[in-house]
Length: 297
Ligand SMILES: [Zn+2]
Image (cartoon, rainbow, N blue to C red; front, side, top):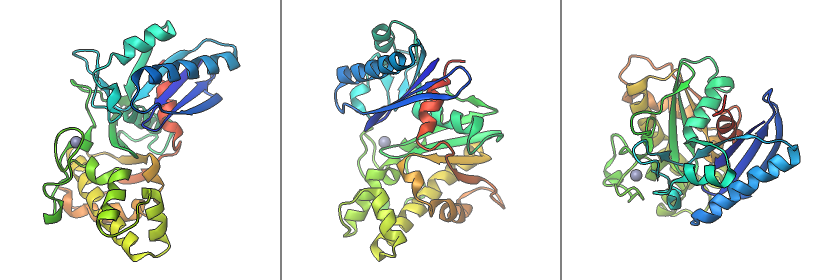
């Protein structure tokens, strides 16, 4: 049996897969925000619960919101900042008395969608998780591109391309820079933008629902968001030229993105035509946890 764990900013999901890939059981618990030791305990409890119910021992793969530094073995770049600088892989392996494999959650997501999801059969795939953050992963010919620093695909902390006057220098980011793509495209960033323009304090997905209902302020907010999204993805298209870009995470449920963003990215792409397809994840929220389970062959 294989167990995949998706360690998110707000929840931790566990999935047990049978040897044939069928789903055995799925469990979800809130993430112990800000507490590393409780995070370890929550993952251990999830694994033990899944193994107990299935009466089987499993391999364990974990999708994390960051990366394990190839140089130090410590977590870096996690927007769940309480993980940064911690030896999560070795701590989990010790706590579970087996080797545990870790991979960036967006890499797990991109691999899952490239294998049997929205980008199945595509040669070059860019996967994006837009929720509390804006992770990205690259899969080429069915293989995750990890990179020398384990940051391949991490577009979220590049500056927003072609910023307009009111987008400079941009919001402060937890990474220490200003105006990062993530500070414009994450769910909390969309919500902040709505407030800054006189809107109510609402989750991003509810602002999108208001826009669908015809609310002028929400529509304007979504239009700003779509223009930013298009510029940010155009820079990805110029560099890795994906056949398919797959969106996952909470904001991937905003239906208008799939029509509006490709209509807006053309002027920013170095090509006379842009055939890149922008698609919603087939496996939805399950893609990260499925990709994590498949970290073991
Ligand atoms: Zn940043």
